[in-house]
Image (cartoon, rainbow, N blue to C red; front, side):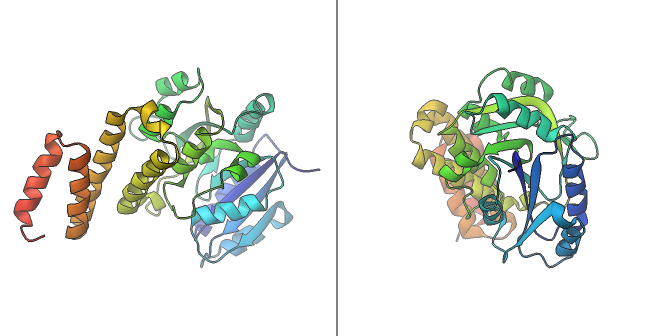
Length: 301
């Protein structure tokens, strides 16, 4: 009999954390699932760690191609109708799949359901949960809107369950993205299927220096690209969100990207990013002032 859920874990050189992640998956109250670990070209002891779980885990190896490609490979080998995508350094809470699969059992029409998470090791930003408690309560009272996903990038795939047929129909993850692939996937799922949010923490996020999202330049560049993909592929998104809101977010991302590039000594790239910020939000005095200061310090760039 096929499992109800396929848990797909893409990993790269996370042997130090992977065991704890797998232990948390197997410690759940829900039991009708399979586990697929995709090793994205690790050079550490990842293979040995997975081998310790024997037949409980299916191990797939690929040459280093990025987390999106690794996740897509795992989903292609999945036997279940529902996919749980986990990072190899975070932890599932014991209620994880009970909460999420319990919802889709009575709401099979959704393309994805997602929930909240906690921070491993204690509060961050003076709060216990990733999505603040009051906002989490509000989100759970109604269907998920594009504005919810756009404004704060609230979707964490570690807290989600995705219909495999929906994942396949939209083409899975964009393999050109290494950091903002969750946001991109959420936008594309939103465009075709109902999405739901549950007010319950179902995983714990581990913050550490090796988080791939710590690459600020790449994160900002990808965030800009994902918004541009949304506007290109779903033109109605700008009408739903409002042109001013879209331009303000893009301008702020370009502004932060320019500052990051300047710190790295990438003068030409910083100039272009700053020009984009000012072009999108010409009345913002902060961007204009930074541009004038930049020009004064870099007259030949």
